[in-house]
Length: 339
Image (cartoon, rainbow, N blue to C red):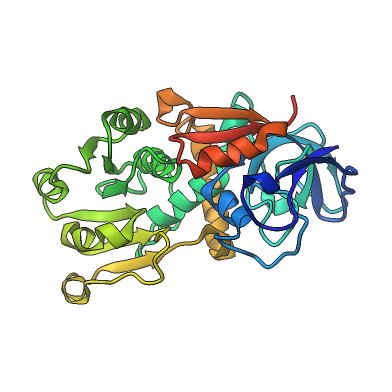
C-alpha cells in the first residue's frame, strides 16, 4: 500500500511517499481503508518537531484525523462490520501510524460510524477540531458535560477566530446546542465564513470588541473559546460574565500566559486549559457521542457554504497539504488517499 512517512522531524520535505505492507488487524482492532485524511496544525507541529509529542519513535505516518471504509475487524470488535463508513480520531497519538496512508489499523474506540449521506470530507474534518471545540464548550464546572439541542440554551458563547477550523466547529456546535454565538474575525471574507457557520454576531477584531460585546450582552459572556490568550486575556476577563469560563486550547509559542488575577478573582472566572489528546475517557466519549449526533442531525458540515472552505491534495502531494496548513490557509486541508 502507499503511505506518506517521515523518520526525523523537520520541514515538509521530510515527508516521502513509500510502499509498505498492509497492516494486520488484531484483537479489538479495526482496519480502515482511508478515503480522506485531514490535516491539522497539530499534525504539522508533530512533523516539524515544534508541537505536541507523544514520545513514539519513527518512522511516522502523519495525520490524526480521517474517514474511510472498514476493511477488516479483529476478534472482539462490536458494532462494526466490513464495508461500514467511519471517521477516525487521534489515529497517530501514542502510535506511529496516522491516516496519511491507504490502510490504518486502530483500536475500536477510535473508529466511529459515519451516517449514510454524510460525506467522507465531513468525517475527515471532525477529530481534532470538533472534539477540541466540544471540550471547550463543555469545560465549565457546572456543565453541561455533553452537548445536545438545548444544552446551551440561554448561554452566550464567544468564539475567538470563528473562521478557523476549531472556531468553525465551536460556532456550529454551540449553535446546535442552542447558544447565542458571538465571534471575532480579521477580514470581511472571514466574516462571511463565520456567518455561514451560524454565528449570530460577527465582530471585526480591529473594532472595539469590548464595546461591541457590552452592547450585545447584559451580563457578559458565559463561555469564551480562546485561540490567542497572550493577546486577548485581559479583554477576555473584562468581557466574561461572573462565574464564566475561558477555555484556552492554544497559547502560541509563549511559555507563560500572564493572568490578570484580581479581576479574575472578583468574577470567580474559570480558566480551562484544553488538549484534546489528554482529556479524560469520559470527556472524550461525551465529545465523540455529541459530535456524532450533531453530524447525524446535519448540524455540522463543511465547505464554504458552511464556513469551512476545503483545500484538497492527492496523497502524493501531502507535503503541499502540510505547507498549506503551515501558511495558515483558511478552511480545512484534506488529503485524498483513495477512491
